[in-house]
Length: 172
Ligand SMILES: [Zn+2]
Image (tube, rainbow, N blue to C red; front, side, top):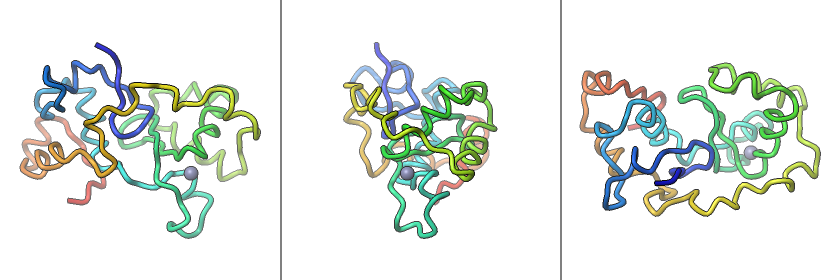
């Protein structure tokens, strides 16, 4: 079993953790806690705008929809394809890696962006992320993960707490 992304590049899951034997996405209750936190967070952030665009643009209508996510759930960084190289540059070349696994990653990165930080123009050409053939399985549709959204809607707060599912700004 390989690693897959769901809906957004970046966060990777063991296929066995998130898909059943038929290739359908599992219910959240069937997932181990760590992937469950990320998958449930995905239901809230799929389709959201790129965080770098949000810092740079005054008008949300000029922002690109994010295609990648990095960092910890609730403190993640959402990135469009245009701004993903800026994150890689900061992470790999400027010491951002020390924030891996830290909730400070997104704020620290976005402060660097707000201060004018950018990757060199040719940096994004080094490793184009679309080369991952398994990055977007069929279950990941741009419009969301309907089966999980329905499952979350049907849960009451106590059930969500029992699963340690933190929904953040899920707008249901
Ligand atoms: Zn962007």
